[in-house]
Structures are given as C-alpha cells and as structure tokens.
Picture 1: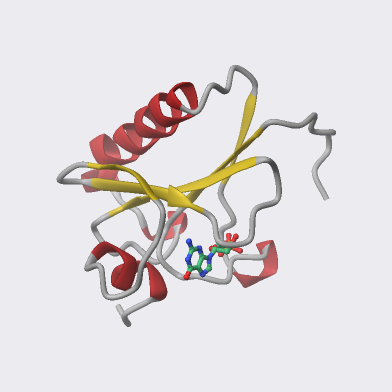
Picture 2: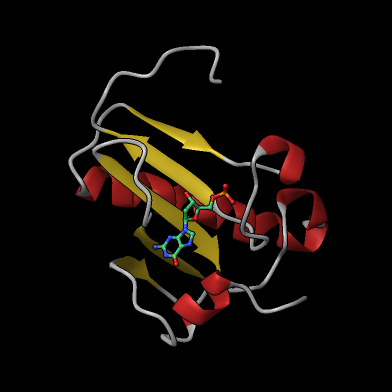
Length: 112
Ligand code: DGP
C-alpha cells in the first residue's frame, strides 16, 4: 500500500493533535472539522479501506470502535456519530482506513 498522509502522522513525519495512541491504533483531531469535536481513529496497520479488511482484522476493528468510544467519552461526548467512508464514491479521500467521530452538535438523518 502506498504511503498516505496518515502513515506520516503515525510516524510523526507530519504533526497532528494526537488524542490517543496504543500499539494498534491512533486517534487525532481532524484537520477539517465538521463538528465542534471531530477526530479520526485509525489502525496502525495500513488497511486502505474497510472493504480491504479480513477476518484476520476482526479484533483490530473491534478495538478501533472501543478506542472511538473511549476517546469520545474523554472528550465529554455522550451523543456522537461514527462515520466510515469506503471508497471514492462514498467521499473517501485518504486511503488508510479511518473512523470519523463527530460530536458537539445535533445530527440529522439520513446523512448527506
Ligand atoms: P475521508 O474523506 O473519509 O477520507 O476523510 C479524510 C479526513 O482526513 C478529512 O476529514 C480530513 C482529514 N485529513 C486529511 N489530511 C489530514 C491531515 O494532514 N491531518 C489531519 N489531522 N487530518 C487530515
């Protein structure tokens, strides 16, 4: 997989406001926030998009959800939205799997 901007955030080649890190995952503030709180949770493993994940990634994917929940709680969020864009047609622009976590404002349904 080609290096993305997110691999450079993992390696600290480019700076980010990092909210959480462990051996498997990183959470950092989105540079273009769409809500008062907007952060991304990514695996350190460079999976380009959700549809590239396999059974081998099952525990990792569960871990990312728990990280999202824990960081949301740390940020004081009770109601929040998770979003995963899978593929260019779904507005994915960075091809390193990431979960958007947004909170701090009301959200409508369906999303745009
Ligand atoms: P997506 O459209 O789902 O691929 O979302 C990519 C998100 O990544 C987008 O909301 C903006 C964010 N982003 C892109 N480049 C950077 C960066 O260099 N730093 C940070 N913190 N976020 C970035």
